[in-house]
Image (tube, rainbow, N blue to C red):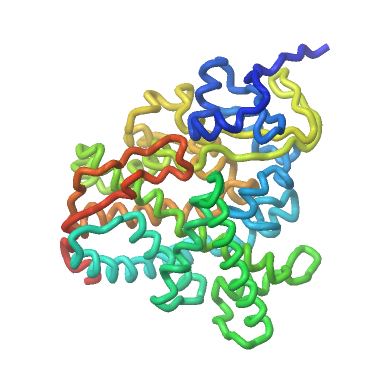
Amino acid sequence: MENINEIPKDEGIDHSFALLKEGYEYILNRRKNFQSNIFETRILGRKAICIGGKEAAQLFYDDTKFERQDAAPNRVIETLFGKNAVQTLDGKAHLHRKRMFLDIMSKEKINEFLDIVKIEWEKALDEWSRKSEIVFYEEVKALLCKASFKWIGYPVHEDNAERLMNELGAMFETPVAFGPQHWMGRMKRNQMEKKMTELVERIRSGEVQVQPDSILHQFVFYKEMDGNLLDAETAAVEIINVLRPVVAISIYINFIVMALAQFPHERAKLKQHPDYAILFVQEVRRFYPFFPFVLAKVKKDFTWNNFVFQKGTLVLLDIYGTNHDPDLWEHPDEFRPERFANWQDDHFSLIPQGGGISETTHRCPGEKLTIEMMKFALDYLLNKMDYEVPEQDMYIAMNTIPSIPKSKVVLTNVKRVRESLH
């Protein structure tokens, strides 16, 4: 008869406050304390099992054992994902819907996006050079907002760009916030969903014309497995699920500036060895906190490593902790891009945007675009613009999710190094 191990338990009635207090490090701290990659806790009054590490990631992305429906708290649905979004689907329905996203992540489409970003970045650089200082995070959010709308085939007027940026930004800046900030995030999502739903209906009725080969047209006329169009509200949610993650790349671009400032010796390596850029980008993605964890629900009873998982139990996979797992990464709390020189991707060790193979799991379909956008931004920051990073508070509080430094990265004396359009 198989031996059954008792899962280490974080004693107490509920640990939601501890999760908020410790943020990204909540799961990792207890994994260290228990000397175990699995423990039980209670979050929002609900029993939850927390797991971390490569083997745990492999388990978590086994769709025969886990499902996403009803796993994410309502506050996350109402701000980050949206109701009936692809992230909440399972099985064939998920794979069918996700194909819509994967189809727009071709090399050709990504290059098209980067071409648009280049134009927007050049325009922004002209403006930045006329200012004594800029708040880089906010500037890049605005830049990516305009580029993302243009990319899907619906350019926005300059007067509307800031409002749209604020609506999209609020969706990923407020999911774990409480009080007025969280309700503001919900309100901003509701505002954008209403406008996008009306746009979907107007395109379908022929009142608004968009290019037949555009991303927007593809999403508006996407058909579910039963052959019917998505309802207008869900189509709007999925269009936003293209725009919002693109704008969220601004967080990663902030990290690039921080890494160049905090580890100035890396500049010489990047200048001397062009191939070093991808190593640097991957280390930025591993080192700095982005997603703290992802959630799923046990689909059916099963046993793993002699631990019992019961149907319906909430499970949290430690994203940040896996990216800082000493069993996977030598000196994980040190910034070492060289660690990726001979690295072989196994899909379950470096998981800042989820694990597994994107085509068959819930791993973020926009990961390739994120990496290419980060490489693009690194090239500009390193070779095509000059700037100073004045003294400021760039401290990242590990209980601030997402991890935006307090100063949001202020740059001064920004100027062009050369005419990068020629």
